Structures are given as C-alpha cells and as structure tokens.
Amino acid sequence: MNKILFQRIESEARFHNPLRDFSEDRHMIEIRKDPLLGDTSVYNPYLKDKAKAFFGENDPELVRRLIEESEKTCFFCGEKVEKGTPRYIVDLLPEGRLMVGEAVLFPNLFSLGMHHPIIRLCRDHFLKLSEFDPARLADGLIAAQRFLQIVHEKDASALFAAVTANYLFPAGASLVHPHLQMLLTPAPYAYHARLLAAQDAYFTENGSPYFTDLIREELAGPRYVAGKGRWHWTAPFSPLGNNEFTAVHETESDFGRLTATDISDLAYGISRVLAFYETLGHLSFNYAVYSSREGSGFEGSRCLLKIISRQNLYTNYRNDDYFLQKLLQTELIINPPEELAPRLRECF
Image 1 (cartoon, helix red, strand yellow):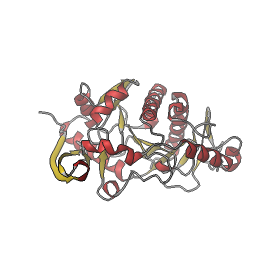
Image 2 (tube, helix red, strand yellow):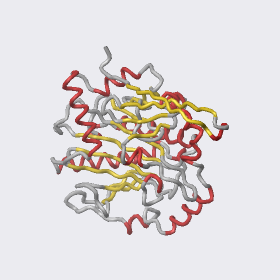
Image 3 (cartoon, helix red, strand yellow):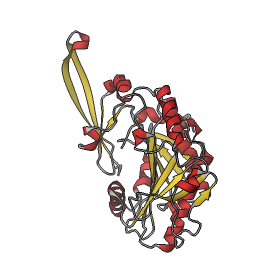
Image 4 (spheres, rainbow, N blue to C red):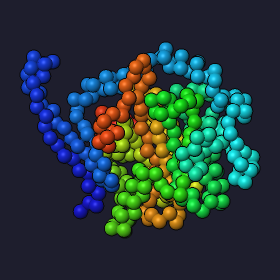
C-alpha cells in the first residue's frame, strides 16, 4: 500500500452558456490535495481558454520604459552599489559586504528577520529569463551560502533559512535589478514551519523521509521532470503557485552543507525552468529555497526549492492572487503538472 496519497475530488458544474446559444455546458471541476500538507488547488480544463485573460501578454514597450526609467536611479547598478547599499557591522562581516563574481551581498535596510541580506545578482540591470545563466545564479547562491555559514559560526539560534527571489513588480520586487534575499531566523516562518512539521510527523510514522518516498513514487510518472546531480525536479501534484516546479535534495536539509556541485546543479535547474517560463511567455517569477539546520528539532526534512511564474507586465495588468489564493488558500491550476513536466523535461 502506498504511503503517499494523490487525492482528487471531482464535481460537475452545469449551466446554459450564452456563448453557445444557451446550450447546456458541463464543466468537470477537480480539487487536488497536497499529499503532505493537505493544501488544495483547483483545476477546470476550460480555464485554459481563459489563460490569456488571466495573464495577458507582456507589453514590450512598457517593459522597455520600465527598464530605462528604473535604471536611472537604481542603486544596484555600477559603482552605485558601493555608495548606495549598507554594510554589515565588523563583528559579523569585517569586509562589510560579501562578493562572489558579480554578486554582492549586503544588509537589507528594512529587515524582516534577524539576518536578512540582499544579494545583487549581477551587473546587468535587467535580464530576460533565458539570460539567467547557471553561472550567475550560482554566484548568488554561493554568496548566500557563505553568509549562512558565517552566521552559523557566530549565532547558534539561526536554525532556519530561506533563500528567495522576487523578479519584477508582479512578483513583489521593489527594484527591477535582479537580486536575491535570504532570511535567517530562530523560528521558521509559517509555510516553512508547516513543511518541517509535516515532514517530521511523516518520518515519525513511516521511518523514512517524505520527499525520499515522494521522489520514489514520482520517478516513473508524468510529473517527474529530471534528476541533476543530487537534485530531483518535479511538477507538484497540487501546486502552490502557477507553473510550479519543485527541486528536492536527496540527503541534505541544510543549505549551508551543500557542496559546490550541489549549488551548481541547482543553479542549472533554475536556469532551465526560467528559460522554459520564457517559452510560455512569462517574465516574472518567485522562488524559495527552504533550509533547516541540524538540531532544529525536525527530523526527516530535506532542502528543497519551489519556483513559480507570476503575472505578466502590461498596462493595468491584474494581480494573479485574489480571494482564492489569499483568503481561501487554494491555488488555481491553469496548466496541469502532468502536462508541464514533460515539456520542461525537454529543457534539461
């Protein structure tokens, strides 16, 4: 008997459609439950026809103006990063900032956690999604890891970490310039806490890590994308966001303990997903790497990444989070994961 259940609840909506001379329409609605957390997402195949109304198309002229206007005052650009960004106190980081290639790490002026660095990813003010190459992404992730290791040496209470990215305004970024953020805290924030608690409960009940069992279940199925080194990429059965993909590390829970090869392989996978998003016509995205340190009190957890596409940029674009996501905490599925995974697989 499978330990992991992929649960679908189906129902039918019937109505007379004015677009079809009021003939009867029947829509099959599918509610999916995340096997670990029980979070729900909903799928109606007819919504594929409404995808353009939901996400529109990026307006090249609007994007061009946004890039040009924002670059004039961007303090991540050129030499301005030296004069316009804060420095860490000497006790924590004697150099004030941490640099890896073009990536520059420094404190957030408006911190949301005990340690909340920002990482300027590259010198370029704007990148198309296909231009987020693995080397650039790896430099940013390495900078985050080095800072994490420094904090771990000095602060035993910093048990939980999230390395995150918001790209462009629809994803919540306040700056156009590509950058990352990292939160290092003594307590995990809500979703991360639920992930850890659920993995711990599963491990206690089954004697094996949830994500190890999940990958074993998905390996030969339609939602498995590819393996790259010790990372496994899948399209989740019940996604957290639009066009979501998840990468799971085989053994580690702590981002700080990943090898250079692990980080390089993760950067490669992210670059493939972003290039794939570009083929779908998307430009904005979020991702998060979830990490917990040994001794955090949670067993059976794994370091993992979740990445989603966000709304496109056009005049008066609509937000892609509304009552369904924010108040009912249920995601809308436009592209089923069983269709997304084979398409991304070709990019690996």
